[in-house]
Image 1: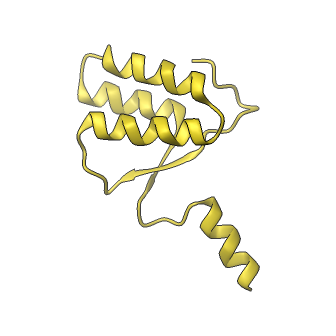
Image 2: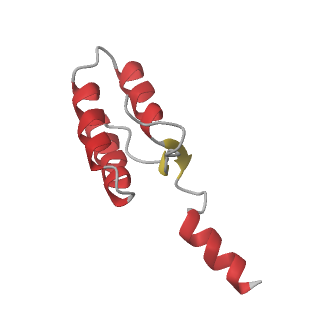
Length: 85
């Protein structure tokens, strides 16, 4: 994988989503692209589609994004809350 420690993984709200792997890959790919990581999104999609199991596919997603819950505020929401205080 080409994601180094200098580029932290973006948070991606996958917990609580429809667990269909194609849905999860789409959400993770969109998150990566939104964070300027289009090449990693393509690499991740290819690896997931060639994986041998659902569990392996989820592990691959976790290599590219920080899997969070849909109930957890994302970075934009955290900044907005901090500005209000």
